[in-house]
Length: 145
Image (tube, rainbow, N blue to C red; front, top):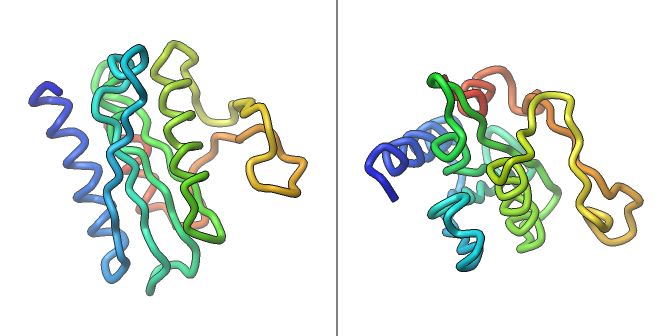
């Protein structure tokens, strides 16, 4: 990973840790495999546990911005869920690969995931929106200038 990409991912992680102060934060390095690794090198998903800011789990990508940045602008992704589950880490890796692999996502886009996002659901697409559940301060991290 280049120094610039590493610095960008570390900046996202730092912002998430500050925003979710008092929450457990785990950094999961997602290896997308040899043929996909170059698309989002050293993708990280930050797994944020419930705490003073939210009683839900949050999953945040770190690495998309650096892989797709254009003129100083790029995106990271946030997903909020009811539980801690590897499924949500896998979905974040799927979003990152889809976005960085040429299907540029933006606000109000949807992305097919091929199956329900959780068992028993009929929702098989994800909608890209601002993370309103967490307030405007987190918007800055997902729309990194």
